[in-house]
Amino acid sequence: MQLTVVINENERRWVGKGFSKGGLLPTDPGPFSSTDGSLSWKSMKEASDDSRLLGRGWVYKEEEPCFTTTTTQKDDSEKCWMYASDYKIESMNIAKPKGGLLQWVRFHRLSRTKIFLPGEFVPEEIYEKCDHCDSSTIEPLSNLMLDVLSYCSLVHNLKHAQHSDVLPLKERLIGLAFSHQIPKEESSDAFNQLKILQQKLENFVKSELSDTVMSRLLNGIDFNFNQRTDKIEFKQRCAEVETRFLPKNERDVIVSLIIRKLDPSYQVHCNKVGCGEECRFAVAQCPNEGCSASMSKVHMDAHDDVCPFKIVTCICGETFVRHELAKHQSEECTLRDAKCSFANIGCTEIVKACDINQHNEDNVSSHLLLAVNRMMEYQDEMRSMRDRITALEHENKDLKQSLKNHQQVSASEIGVLRTKANLTTKTIAALEANSKSEVKKMTDKIEKQQKNSTKEIGNLGTKINKTSKTLAALEISSTNEFKKIRGSN
Image 1 (spheres, rainbow, N blue to C red):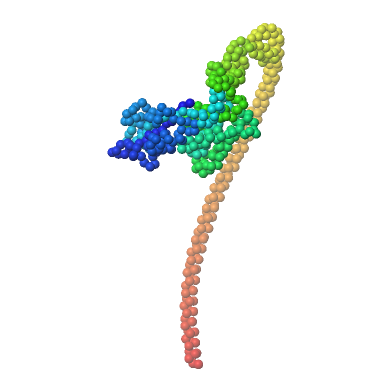
Image 2: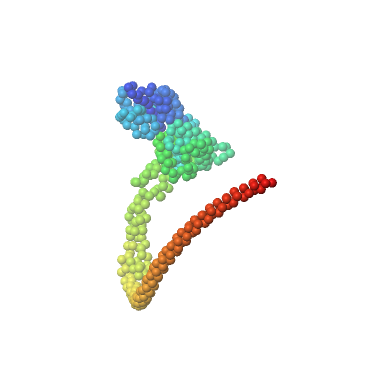
């Protein structure tokens, strides 16, 4: 199996100097970086020597000693540069092939082919046996590994799946999967061992959650691993991780090696070397036109029994794809059980759809009798309805007369109330006029009393002044008399 590793070559523009690697800012990726800029290298050699890009079990193709441009252009000036305003992921995602005044950075892709070596994971005597594994075991484990890696990448960074986060997680996850051994005291049953491994992978998620409490508080992930399938952000991250970091063909190869290691009794793979397409575990496409399912041959018969696209024959002799058969048998099949055409008037016979006409011909008299009986029932019901209608008409007439009488009484009572209301209005007006007159009289009286009080208060003040003067004169006279008496003594 081969995959392509892609990196970026980066440059920044300075006014008057043009683009160069020496113009990169400290906050920019290095001259060479991962496509998202989260990993950087100063030189091509550093990028080539970084094992994180390779991953365990991979080596670069010998024919490609270093990364090369993804285009066929050899002239450096004609490299397929992409121009952006900066090296943020959002800006790089909308980079353009032509520069402008606001495009201060540029990058272009370099690629290199890597080759998978299964011997890095399991001994040759394990991986050389059988070219295939049971698809029913590969698919669940492959999907679980993708789910675990995607969820853990969300835990580390909710916004972006970056090489700096995902590649170490991927390395640890694959290492955990291959580290699982079958203890001697345990059963070597492959299905049981795969269940144990599944639990270990789920525990890997719990470990990442416990180690990244602060990161989760900052990133705001608000659902647990068991709730992942309904979350749109998880589905989007799965698609991104599968495209950029763990493609299905790589997952399936890794998972097949794990299964071979955990299946020493050959339950889900065979013990033949180079068994090829004859192997019962070889994956095959469902032969039914329209069906996209693929699975190991050992499961093909069971699938064929339920495949919705298999051509099946109805008891009437017509052929259909299975998912259309139910509708045909319930609505169109001539041999389906059908009710008599006169079922709505009492015939309870169930016959084949193709025999309906013959049944009607054979039972003309009984159907006629049913029709007559039903007509008699209808006549009785119509007679009863007429009586009821007549009674309702009389009742309606009585109600109309009663309503008319009530309207007349109500009109008379309303006239009386209007008269009383008019009298009350006049009485209130008279009381209002009388009250105004009384209020005016009281006001005049109060004003007169206020004037008299003011005058009396003035007279009283004059008397008080006179009295004060008299008292002052008496006091002076008393003082003089007292002084005379003291002088005579």
